[in-house]
Image (cartoon, rainbow, N blue to C red; front, top):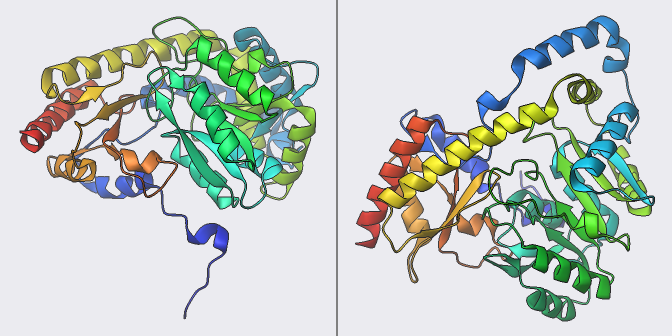
Length: 396
C-alpha cells in the first residue's frame, strides 16, 4: 500500500531530540539532550495531598467536560500572578488555558497565518515552535541571534524582504536553545520595529520564572501599548511538565480566535490538572517552590559551566545563561558539527545538534545544545569529561 500524506506534514521530520531519546535505552549513555525539568523539582507530596482532596470533595467537576477557555478560578489566578510578577495584562487582554505552551504556539499561528505566510523567528529557535508553524503551512524565516538577542536592524530588513510575514516569534528570556537573554534595549527596539509594521509578536516565556543570576528584564508584553503581543507560558518548568497546562495572555480578538481553534483540537485542557494547578497556586507556597528550583538550577548550571571550562578545548565557546535550562556550545570555524555529535555519542554522551533548531532546515550549524536540569551532578561531571575527551580528539 502506498500512502500519500498531506502537504502540511509531508515535509516535517521527527524531532531530533525525541529521536535521540530512542537511543538512550543504553544505561551507560549520559544524556545532555533533554529539555526536561529536574525530577527533584516536582512537589510530589503536595500534589498527592491536593489530588486526594479534589477527588474527595470535587470529583464530578474534575472528571466532567469543562470550558474551552479554561477553569475560571485558574484563569483568574494566572492573570493576577502575571500582572504581579511580569506586569502584563491590560484592559484589552484576556487569559486562557491551553494544553502546554506548545499548543499556545500552534494556536497563535492558526489564528494569524495562512498557508505560505511567513513567521519570523530567532535563528536558531525552539524546534517545537518551528514544527508547529510548518505544520500550519507557514514558512519559517530566521533572523540571526546575537549575544544579546535579535538585531532589530536585521529584523526590519527581514520584514521588508517578506511582505507576507504575519508574526514574529521570540523567546527573549533564557532562549531555547541558546540560553541567551535579549537585552532591554533590544526588546524596546524590536517592539518599535514590530509596531512600525503592525506585526504581531508571539512572546514565548516558559523559563521566565527561573532566573538564578543577573537582573530581571521587563517582558515585551509589559511594553505592549498597541495590542501587538501574544504572551505564552506554562506550568511545565515550575510545577510539572506532564500536566500539560499552559496559558496565553493576549489581545481579546486574537485569543478568541485561538479558543475557536482549540475547540476543534481537544475541547479543553485536562480539567483535573487545571484544578490541581489552581489549588497549588492558592494553597501552597508557589514562590518558595520556585525559589527552590532556582537554587537547584543555579547549582547545576554553575557545575556544568565549571566542568566545561576544565574539559573543553579553548576553541569551543559556550554561553553563560542567567536562568532557564540550556547552554549553547559552538565549535571552531570549519568544524563538522554532526560528525562531532556522533563522536560524542560514541563516548556515551548525547547532545543535540544545532541544525535541529535552524529555521532553514538545510542550513549548516557549528553549535550543539546542552541541558543541565535533567542529569545528576555525577552525570554532569562524568558527561562533560567524556565530552571534553571527544572534543580534544575531534579538534586536535
